[in-house]
Length: 357
Image (cartoon, rainbow, N blue to C red; front, side, top):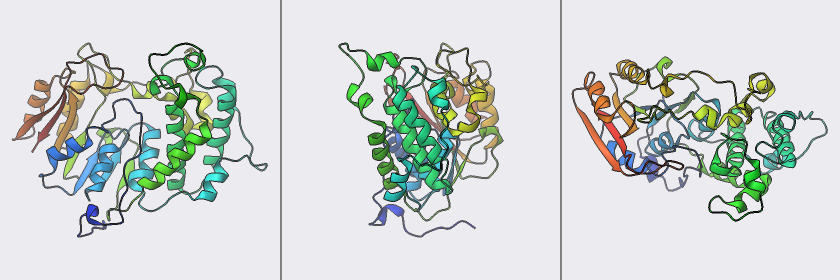
């Protein structure tokens, strides 16, 4: 039985929680309020965020008092959401933060990052810090404390990366003494420990109880079970040229940290940037993504379907409308306008939201 409160959580004077800052490619952070405005008048209490990513939309719906089920295929996203969406009360104490940032004689510290990622993303000293810190985090027994600490570690890794990605071996960009037209060398050079403390504080501040039992999953969206009043769908984007956004490749380093003890067995040593061995993903395949949308719409046809996508993608917005109309009698299409994602060179692409009732 799910726990429900009568009052809207935003009416609680002690709830000042807000979603932490992230630097995630394709994040809907700047669009979450707009998305909520488009669906606020719909009648729903339970919602599935089927391709949750950073969790910003699921978190926004948690703020609105909805029962949120978060899902993402990437384990590091799932872990982060477990601490921010599923978790309602647990926080990291000041003592625990100090313990995580210290070296302990009774703990054996592997050197996986130091040995396999030298001169790839971080300095030797930083690699040693990562090995030590993830090992300490892995000692945490409480899953929510683990999630909050992992969130801080992953965000610290991202903020110290050029482009905030792990798609290239480009440590030299950080270290080169040259004039710069982009990037933030101050952020890159700020010590890992300082960033970790900043992101732990943000994660702790984001924890709140909306009176519902929210859940997080790490599955293929097509394999999810359950009934939901509304299903929010924000799949990886496939451009009109047929190029899909491979988040696993962009953030393989963070994904590797989630399986630290076995990471070495899944590293593609043929790649300069030490990516994970590639895995097929229907949602980045231009030949099969339309069929995947159709299967997903069919699977959740009894729910209100809300789809975020780009106007110039595959499938096209009209193809998505046609697909949705096969399962929904009323379909509306909303345009946000020319919202440009980081690293995107396409200024004509518009953010779209399809709503099928």
